[in-house]
Image 1: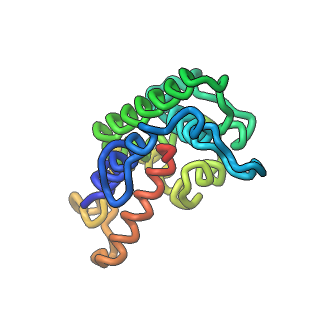
Image 2: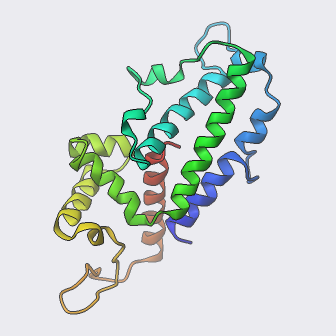
Length: 205
C-alpha cells in the first residue's frame, strides 16, 4: 500500500468510515448543545465544541492554501485562539459541525486527485512563495528541515519532476536518483510511515 492510499483510508476513517475507532461524524451526531460546551469545573480541559473549532481552524487553513485562497485563511493570534467559540447557541454548534464535515470532505477530494509530488510542492511553496525558512517550514508540517531543503533543491533544479518518487527508478545513464542499494522492507515501512505523518500534519489532521 502506498502512502497516499494509506492516508486516504485514515482520512476517511477519521470522519465517516468505521474502523477500529468510531468516526467523528457518528460520535458528534447525538452530542447535545449542553454536552458540547461542558468543561470540568477547573477549566483545564477544552470542551468538545472547542476541539471541533480547533480541528476546523487548521483544516480550513490548509483547504484555503490548496485552493490558492490564502486571503481567506482563518487567522489566530496563537494556538490557544484556535479553540475560540462563536456565540454559544444551538444553531452555531450545528453550523460548526456541518462546516467541519464539509471542509474535511473537501480536503479528502483534493487528496484523492493529488499526486504525491503535488503535496510536496505545497511544502516547497511555503519556503519559496511564503518566505518561511527551512526550520519554520519543517516545524509547520512536521518533517525535518533537511527533507525540506532537499525537496526545495530538487524543485529548483528540475521543477515538479524533481519531486517525483524516483527510488530505484533510473531512467537511463545518469538519470534519476536511484538508491545505491535495494530498499529494505523495514526501511520502506518506516519511510512510508514518516511520509504519512508528514502529509497528515500538513493537511491539518
